Image (cartoon, rainbow, N blue to C red; front, side, top):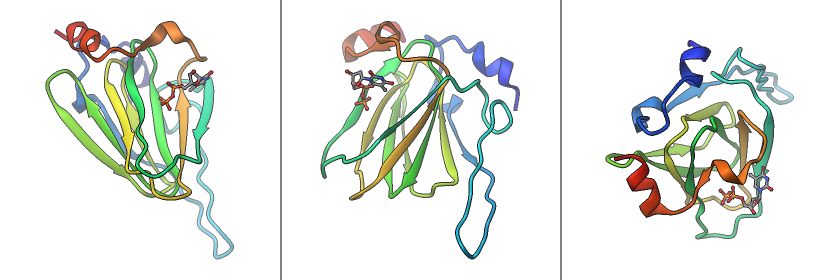
Length: 147
Ligand code: TYD
């Protein structure tokens, strides 16, 4: 994996094919498992922020936006949910249901998180601090951005 190439992606041109599911390391023990994630070692960007989404009521949708520069790795730390990705032309739906799987989401993709199982936790590693100006929250604007 070449982290520098990934960070140079042009977010107007990215597609769902720039996203992929990573098998994260697993240290297995009969008393419980560990998945470690270290900067650049397992994922193609430097982690500057971590957040997690929890207590999502049944039937709710999260996301519903794109980012201009932000790279993310989304992990179902507990339970399961689906991530719907859209690049202006193609859709892709990825089901995350194991804490050792991480979905790399490139910048410039519309995403929605749906079908949360009860008690699920979505852990997100992000390449930058929170910045509202990095969001595209208007779907029509997003489609124009990707033309
Ligand atoms: P948002 O990213 O829109 O949530 P989601 O994509 O999960 O539906 O964020 C919801 C609110 O939380 C919004 O007001 C911004 C705020 N927020 C922060 O202040 N810091 C963060 O790191 C994140 C992810 C959100």
